[in-house]
Image (tube, rainbow, N blue to C red; front, side):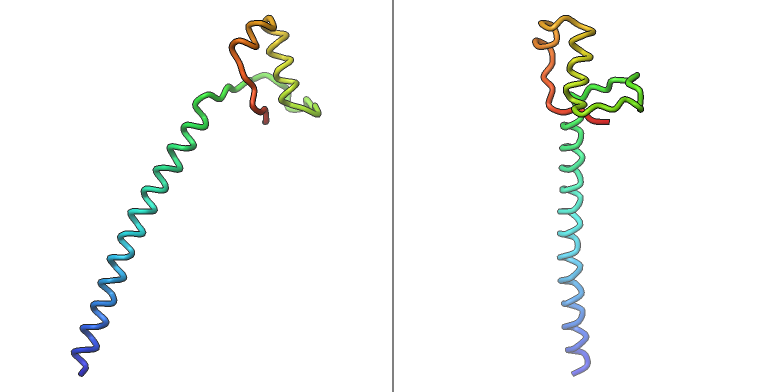
Length: 88
């Protein structure tokens, strides 16, 4: 009687370990996907240094766009860049 209970408990532990291994593999796969997604989202980012931290504007995206237009001619800017968002 006791031996049967131990066998069932052992099977239960083995099933749990098998399920845990599947969860571990899934977690590793999801971590890899998240890292890939983050890397892809950073690929086309442009960092602009030199804007003072104290610069306060209502629309940072528009401010950065205008800054780039002032530094380049308008045609170059519109041909080369597409602004989606700007933030600190």
